[in-house]
Amino acid sequence: MATSAWRAKDGFEAAFHAVAGAMPHLVWTLSNDGSTEWLSEHASAFAAPLISSVWDWIALVHPDDVVDASVAWNHALANRTPFDGEVRLRLVDGMYRWHSIHAEPTADASDHFVRWIATAIDIDGARMASDSMRFQSDLLAAAGQAIVAVALDRTVIYWNRAAEVVYGWSADEAIGRLSTELIRREEGPEVLESMVAAMLEGESWTGEYNVTTRDGRSITVFVTNTPMFDAAGDLVAVIGSSIDVTERK
Image 1 (spheres, helix red, strand yellow):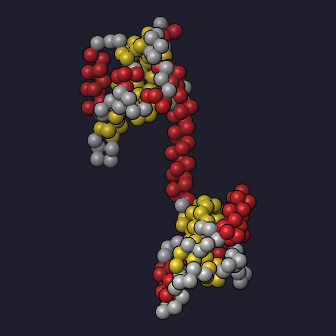
Image 2: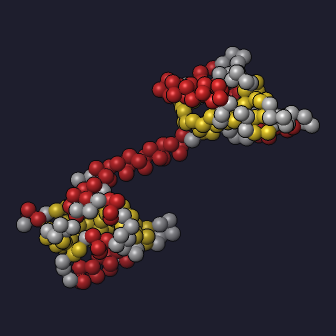
């Protein structure tokens, strides 16, 4: 069943075209069978060299995305349910950029299907940033050194796989708990005091100390703690990397 109200009288359709045409996104409308009825200026410019008289947006989808997109779109058409998807669309220069596409079935006052309204928003930059962040996160997770990030209240906010091996706590168990409960240093307070002094000066701290692991073992770790600042220059967290050097002693 169509889900949005559509009023084609009293100049509504003309107003819709004016508003949609002013949007920086691709906007188009489709008939019951999915054929394009109207394209916004941005959509027309986006696809002009690639089409003849009819714009089939599926034809612009990257070959690696087209099967899943076609199946989902055909399902939406058959059931008149909203369509949502992220696909790479071909630009006029032949390059592809990620777009978030939403198509909504619309109805008139009597709840009779009228047409589809579709939009495509360029999310390529966001996808690239997300992929980059995911890659960096995967690198940290796969790093051979135990990497732990701690907020100023000493709460653990990051704990990678190597930290699980070295200290014996899983990430699920560690995140949200106090680091002092998980990494139990055996030295006196002077070690902590020197760390804090270095962080407040915006400097890294490097050294060795003994800790007790979850299973009660005493190990020696070589640690580098690095302060992390926000855009205003305020200290917000400390990132520590450590390796077990017990066998080197």
